[in-house]
Length: 78
Image 1 (spheres, rainbow, N blue to C red):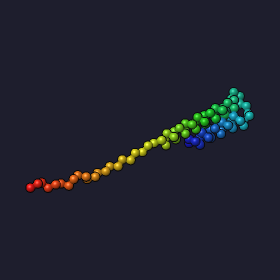
Image 2 (image 1 turned 90 degrees about the vertical axis):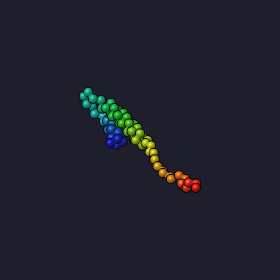
Image 3 (image 1 turned 90 degrees about the horizontal axis):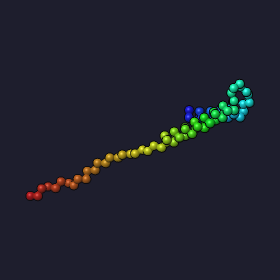
Image 4 (image 1 turned 60 degrees about the vertical axis):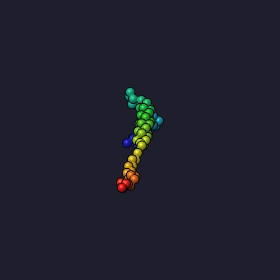
């Protein structure tokens, strides 16, 4: 619900800020819309930061090799 939720919040905020002209006693719908827009933008920034952090991982592959490089045994001198 990261990017989708933030876009939804921004759309609702834009509708409240720019399209709704109703008056509710004690509530400024334009200000509520701007607050929703700001919260949606902040939510999107945090989502992108977390996605970038998740993708910034390193992987190391360890390969063990066991080569038998000992010289052949030399028979004792007679």
